[in-house]
Length: 503
Ligand SMILES: Nc1ncnc2c1ncn2[C@@H]1O[C@H](COP(=O)(O)OP(=O)(O)OP(=O)(O)O)[C@@H](O)[C@H]1O
Ligand SMILES: [Mg+2]
Image (cartoon, rainbow, N blue to C red; front, top):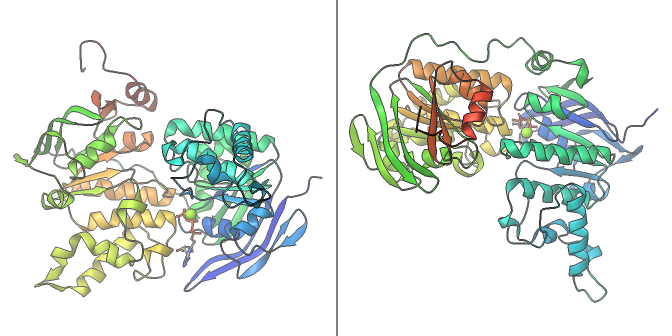
């Protein structure tokens, strides 16, 4: 019989007003990739933070290689063999990769208090090589490295402590599609070396590709642990949500209008070249391209975060948009892909965040209409199923997916004419995804024009009335509704314009 490398038993965790975990048990064996799944707010991150010494449990025990342990802090946990890679990397961008890996480590300091640079570089390079990162130069500063390489550095840092257990909390969320495969190579190597890996993700496809086992949490309780070959996607969804989930993509009842709400002509700026398109009233227009294709640049341009040449015409009038406030004045709203940097103000409450963009409408004679704000925030909390004790909860304490819902709610509440959505469901669970899709649909039916940018192909295909494909900043193809499948979409997104021009 193999023995578990790690056992968690009877874990409870209470935050003020929230029971985040109740009586959770969890076992981990060497050389297994163990997926941890559950809806937003189910308790995944909290359980992993307890395992890695960030929080201490209110109750419960952790056994590592048979011995009961307590972790005072993350460094303590790392020394004892448990490392975590959080979704946001904790690297110092102005230090080299090697320095990041061995930061503050006594074994790299020589007899006279000098750092042993060559030992450090050699050891760092060896670690990075051992997980397939041979092309990374550890003497380079981290800010010059791509996202995948930064993740490799995080993993190397974890391994420098001889990790028995490595926890990866939504490791693919920050990676472009083509780098996920590289990350899987690293995970496979680690598995082969006997490391036990906990893999937290909302992406079904990945779970079935990489995991050996899966544990599902719901409302802070463990539902079950199963072998991956014992379950289907439907089983997992049911375990997570606690009921059958209906159709993910709503069916479109009526066609969108003909009136052109937004017209973009010959837009050019760094990674976009002479992009022209029209967005009609109530239309959902998908914009798809691989990272760097220009979709993000175009979104930022339309919201006034960047400048460039070309014309933007809103409701038939050429407009100047050189700042977000000018964009907002034209009733353009933007849900950015990176909620942490651009979407929300974390120390503020859910209610305050939701009401931010609509403060002008909510204040009568400069006095805030508190009752209206409360009503509105209650409505959006319910619509988006934001899980929190109340709308007075600080956004800081929300789970990752629930923070994303606040970002979306915030812009929906602003009642725009044109809504640019970029990666609207990143980090969001299936139940909430269906909710968000429904809301997007409903808004389109009501006449809102939506520009949808997403790297999730099923989402673009399932929701869009039309899809424009970008390749290196140029529109190379247009798919009508129902015309595209994933293969064709990817094919178009990875090739230049065919001879003879568009279509
Ligand atoms: N520091 C904290 N203070 C108060 N409540 C917290 C804190 N951290 C988490 N919570 C609450 O505990 C519950 C579990 O959150 P957790 O972050 O573990 O969810 P999760 O499963 O990781 O969700 P997601 O998929 O959205 O990341 C949520 O209700 C969350 O609001
Ligand atoms: Mg989480």
